[in-house]
Amino acid sequence: MAKSTYPRDRFDDLPEDAGRIGAHRAENPRMNGWAVLLWALAATVVLIGLGVFGTLVSSGRIDLFPEPEATVASTPEPTVTPVIDTSYDVLVLNATPQEGLATEVKGEIEDAGWDAKGAGSVLASEAGQDDFEETTVYYAFAEDEAAAAGLAELLGGALVAQSDVYLQTTAADGEEQPTQLTVVLGLDRVTDE
Image (cartoon, rainbow, N blue to C red; front, top):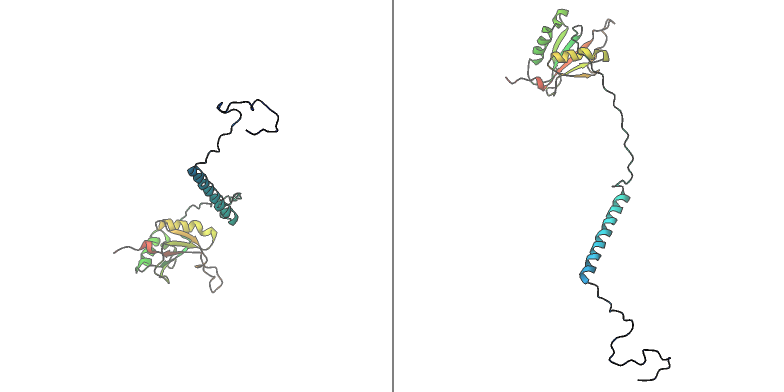
């Protein structure tokens, strides 16, 4: 062995077969290839998920901080007590393909007390269409709603609606025309004969 210039210590005089003496480091362990692949796949899935989520947030499809929706308190509609008021004139319009239906309903209304008022208080006619869906009683003014509801109840539960389509104008002599309710008969009144 060659002489060294270092100072002597206790390791210089050891026999060759004494075995290992001193600190030894273990070999670098190899990483398992499958474990590395699984960790890489997991990281890829997480990164893609975060990217999709970020895209949805930035495009506005997902709102992280939604504003609370304003709730509007609904006011209950007043219910009207139906009243049979024979002081109203009634116009019955047949809006179905069944002939004579307006005359039949006119008879029902007159039998309920409208004939006492005199001729002309209940008129029957054909409407301009023959495919009206549901029988409806129309009234012109809010104060006529109870009478319209009473007439609708008399007809077996017809709809009630306010409309100025059938509003009468004043008579030619300047006198007010009597208030009128208009019944438009729909396909729900058609009978199979």
